Image 1 (tube, helix red, strand yellow):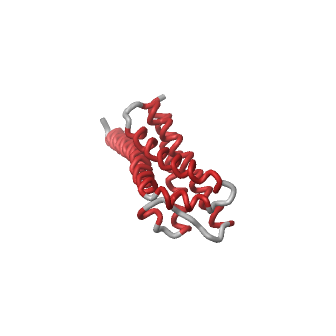
Image 2 (cartoon, rainbow, N blue to C red):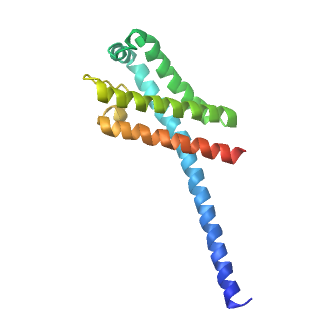
Image 3 (cartoon, rainbow, N blue to C red):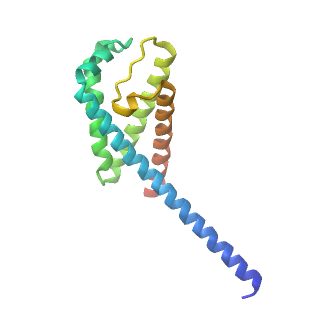
Length: 162
């Protein structure tokens, strides 16, 4: 093996190391997103259930959907907890549908925040704990980042399991 061939072998080896590292990072981000959604939805679902009367009272003040405040209050709280549980079940189809539902729900939450900030004077957030204490701009960015991460994880789960 001459010097040139040895140099090419080193470059090829580095390339495979970089590909493996990129694959590991991609795998890590995908799982971080899935389990991050599980933690976040379990946390916010429980927080909403612990303050369900306040959550429902706040939902009654929202234009157009206030008449469904009780159904929305219980429904979102329970949906978040169910999604959190489904995201940690080690069955691919269940986890993928839960991830899809989680991502769509986060998109809806982000859209809700954007519309509320733009059109509603008395802004309401009953997400619970740290998330509830965020500024409106930070909360919107937070939701959009999770929405994008969910889309990324959905793409990666499709590629990995095809």
